[in-house]
Length: 293
Image (cartoon, rainbow, N blue to C red; front, side, top):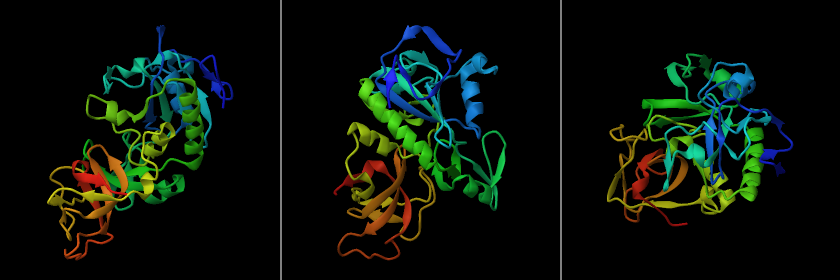
């Protein structure tokens, strides 16, 4: 996959009207976003602003990736697009000046309305069956949204395949030092994209930043008694049994959000009562985890 003059040669290209035209950047970060919508072409046109026939004058990105892998580039990689907002990472602030922004078609989280019914951030309702037909979803809590669990539609294999090709090409062409979520760089405290359904660590693997074999890693808890919660937030109800995990409990990480990991219990400390803990899933604070294998 070739980048020439800061553009992918194989993708459709059109220039968004929402760019800092006098500012040139040398990107060192890639920021992954979701679009919070259901139409790839609609997201593309919105982010292109007036150039896309829409009234949007405040946001843009460099790339938009549809569910089937179709990708549109709407800004060259050396131009500052408007995707990160108020942001900070490492010693950098204002990450629009340092980052490539990739928008991936995904509606984001949907809140439960009742049995087998969900609603997205724009009031669009979807049944569980409709979400399954859309490609499936996982349910997970999120402290930035509120109490309870939410539906997070899965990303498609076609999206992830083209995203890996894109990411590898950007790493080869620019001095990329990290791949980050919008959530972790957002300084306002309300962004959630690209969410727990996005396998961010597999993209960091392309930089060699993530430990190899993360999906097979085993962790031990380090607190004497670590609360084992039904949601990833302080004060959430404990999973009972076991309620708490003793120091040395071994777990496998199934997914992460900032400060919390959704884990499966693999083994309990020698001499402890296993009770109903083995195989049980729940949320623990990442502050009290140590990787052992």
